[in-house]
Every structure is written in C-alpha cells, then in structure tokens.
Length: 166
Image (tube, rainbow, N blue to C red; front, side, top):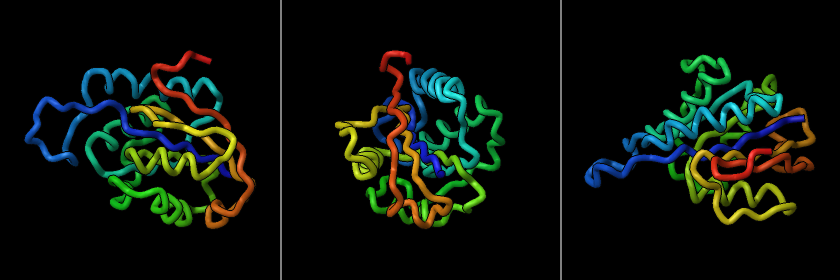
C-alpha cells in the first residue's frame, strides 16, 4: 500500500502587492496553521516518510514547519520545480518517479492543481477547494508508485484548519 498526503501551502501574505508570487511568505495565520495541521496528522498515527514540495516560498515554508513537527530533517525535503502552479496531470508525473522504498509521501503544492488532483483521485468525495494548510489523504493498493494512477484507491481523510477536530 502507498499513502499520499496532498497538502496545500498554508496562508500566505499579500502585504506587498509588488512581490513576485513565487516569493510570497506565510502570514501569521499560516505560521500557526502549519504546525497545527502537522500535529493533527501526527495524532492520526502516520506521518510521511518523504516530503516533496513546490519550491515557492509559501509551500517550502509550510513543508519545513510541518517537517519540524514530524522530526523530519528539513534538508531532506525534495523541491520539485514542476509543482509550482501545476496542473493535476503534473502530480502524476512527480508521483511515478518516487522511490518504492517510501510508502507514505506528502506533496506540498498550490491551488487550483491540488484540488483538481484530489478530485481526480477519488469519486467518493468531491472537494470544491482544498483550503490553505488543507490535507487530503488517499491510499493506493500497490507496491509501486509507478502504478499509483491505475491502482485501486481508498479515500482516507480530508482535514483543514477550520474543520472540526476529529
């Protein structure tokens, strides 16, 4: 079995309208939500063995903050240029390259691609929007990430900062 956690970056700052989108940092709420969501995932009894992130500052910062909660070394976070503002199909390209030694993987990225990809993965639920710091988890019945797209999948959970604690 392979478990995938799709995580949207936490809330970013719009204080400087001239700042390049790629360089936008997290705002106060984002800095609070990221560790909170990491803690919620930890309380479910599972954390990622591999973290892959968009290189944009807000995604990278979210990944680092969550990694700290999980005692995952920040220098081990893989930055994948293709994940910056990508389409749903790009996620599959990234996933097929994951080493099969990893069974639980988190991908940090952006909307609208992350919401589109979450909806592509399951017919069980439909999501209008993965909110900032939202976590969508799914399990695939395969031992190989290359087969992830074709494998039978089971929706695990969808959690985000303003949802009711489970």
